[in-house]
Amino acid sequence: MDQTMDDEADPLSVAAAPTHPDSMGEFSIIHVNPRRCDPATHHPDVSCQACGTGRYAETDLDISAIPGGIMTRYSLGELAFAADSPDFQAILRRAYADKQRPLCLCTTGGVELYIAFAHERYWLKRMPNSGERHHPGCESYEPPAELSGLGQVYGSAIRENLDSGITQLKFEFRLAPGKSRTSPAPPETDQSPKPTAIVASEPKLGLRGLLHYLWEQSGWHRWTPATAARRHWYGLRKALLEACAGKVAKSSPLDTWVFIPETFVLDKKDEINDRLAKALSYADNLHRFRLLIGELKEIKEARFGHKLIVKHLPEFPFFINEQTYKRFIKQFDSELLLWRGIESSHLMIIGTFAINQAGHAELDSVSLMNVSSQWIPFETADELSLLDYLVMHGRSFAKCLRYNLAGTKPLASVVLVDTEAPTAVYSIQADANDERAEAIRALMAQSQTASLIWDPRHPGLPDA
Image (cartoon, rainbow, N blue to C red; front, side, top):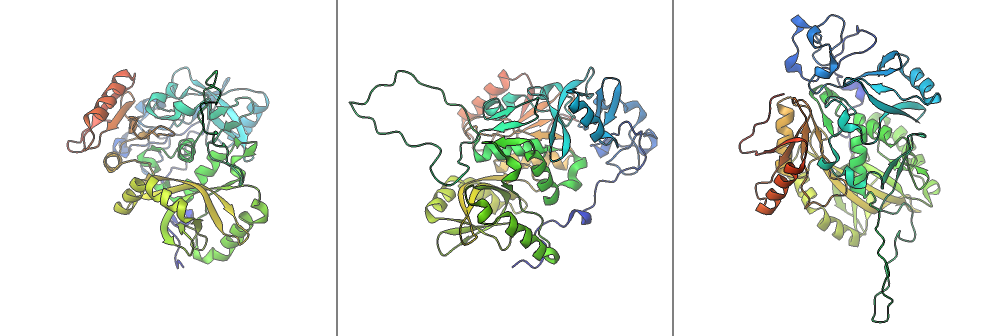
């Protein structure tokens, strides 16, 4: 049994980024590049949430000029407001009732947003296919679809309803015990009728694709130096739960069946276990699976098969039968090797599970995702070295995620958002064959985004 808190402490014990109590009221600036802070030239009325001692220079009051900054100004008609305005929720409530759409003022002329309601709160959401129109430093900015796997599933597996604010999700994994989603086709014989047509199948989100989607929706695929103090399990769990709000699958709200363990604190062990028992009782989960998202801690042998131990759940293992375990080890050998070889990394697990009559969790499907010490997803050791280099040099970027794309398909690693124009960075493994390198160069040639190939042996990137 763990005798101390598993991983990060309660958020109250984690130092937050220093802030100034005084601000302009209408908006504030989150300054994400401390190297650019000069206390002698900061404007006296604009708060800087990164440097802690100064304020951003008056000459840089135009937020769109801040490299890697996060834009917080919005407008509704003549009304200008910010995400930290005291009446932010009241403004959105009125606009939601009147079916108005605010503008994000990250660029000249603004970019339209829509309002969603979930978890008893109103949320500003990016309009479909508008991510590129936002300033690269804006939290609503998204790289072009060609630079990630989102374009393959958006509009089919992910469908946003702008009127209701609800996003419909379609999964390729089953959501309840019983019959599989698809039955095997009967074997063909010489007497079998020849099909008269071929019907295209719509892409659906796999487990990894769903995890990538929630990572992007939570904003944890983005990195700026100012967010470093908030990168801990409590912050990640909160962001992922908020990302689940307003998402529906098979008429079931995603946030009613997702399970993300809360931070384990020894002094609150009994309270936590009581909440766990209520959330995962056999009676309440008899006819459905639950969806686990957590950090894998270790894998142990069980009397029958194996059990996966998830961080913050020291006394609640997830069991996996021997046959599934063998497939699990074979399928995720690369992810497991990276996890075991890189001590500072984390290994995220996502999977569907049922609660049996004994009150134990039995995994039905599972996937894994490697993340860095800053919880940024990565696929290879070379890609991790790129992420470490960017973090160490105070850069701001968005991680490109694969979703359902096959591992053989080329993909940009990150998009730098602190350069004059967004810049896609591709990482080629040292042992990559000529065919893969050529495929990456062909993708770069087709893209409208500035791009480059990063070589860990000769690191160097455009200046911020």
